[in-house]
Length: 203
Image (cartoon, rainbow, N blue to C red):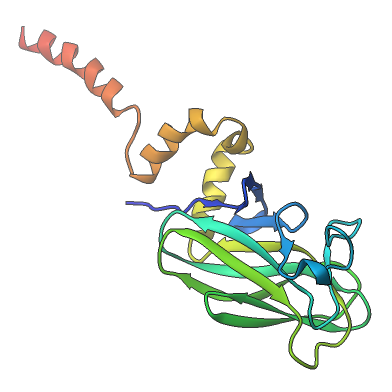
């Protein structure tokens, strides 16, 4: 039986889900993340005009959530840039800390690490400066979450349904679930067509 994990991003009451390439989900920090210490935010809401969060001082720390509907191993990455020379941030989740470095002023997606999520629910991810040796400030725009081993499956589903996954999901859901279970949604129709033919032969 095929299996797919649907990731739904949630912060407070807001949901945000954007499909990125390679079966990954990109979570914009603008509108989804918040500063752990609001007093340390560089502006009233903590976000820059380009939608990124700048982590410069040691006290700068922001958090964002995503949700999984079953246990899974996820790949965490962040999209950011070096704002003032090469710099590093630390991605913290599930009791693990992953250092991530940025060398240039162009936005790029850098891998953080692999996280095993033991049960369904919300996962908190924090972005912070390292205790020391962090270098220059870093602008972080997105958290990118991917499910290990599901890339090909997700790509196949998206290739079949495209943007209708988001605009007509309720309508498409039965067909997707049947496909994931290895069932043919037309099997019942075929069997009904075969019965009259069999009865005719018997007569």
